[in-house]
Length: 275
Image 1 (cartoon, rainbow, N blue to C red):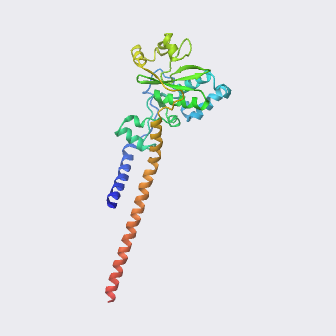
Image 2 (image 1 turned 60 degrees about the horizontal axis):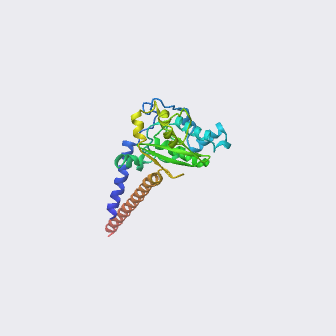
Image 3 (image 1 turned 90 degrees about the horizontal axis):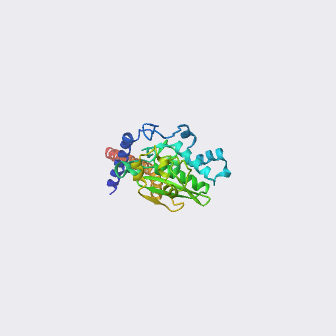
């Protein structure tokens, strides 16, 4: 049993080293061939805003901390997020979380899609669900209620300001000529597509909004994936460390055993020569 365990450990470490050279030498870069041509991406914000707290501090500096509960403040947050990211899926690299990365490569690609807000803030790009996760995290910190708006192949949010819901889509960046309202109001007033016109086709619009699923107020977004990423992040550090410790102990025991064997052999030879 011990020999089998030893073999597994050595093979596991070897596979990890080989995987690093195969997958781990890639760097995340800004690639504006991705995303949408109409996006208002501002690359300078990538270096200014590296966490949700940075985002809130940026809004505080612009509008004032006392205005956190206002519609203008929430709109500013959403607009800043729109400028901060261009559209593409942010995923962990091998170096950041190799367990999540390999899970995404060989099991299911969504397992490697970043869902922890501050981790998403390290990337220049994010998908609809990811920018919504960032906005939800910021709203939670400033005490503004929110709820997810699940659409067909798309994801957005509503925020509750002064007891009224307002629709925000930081990914597709709609502009509503008659002002921002709840999704239900925008649909009833036939104003919704006016906001998306020029960003998506009418056919795609009809498909996306054919399904609308509201979440519960302040419901955690992607809770299972968050747990998975936090656990695999710790495991991705501890597991290689444990493998190395095991191998070092195993090698030291092997060397110690060899030395004892050689000493015993030498003593045996010495006794025979003396006789």
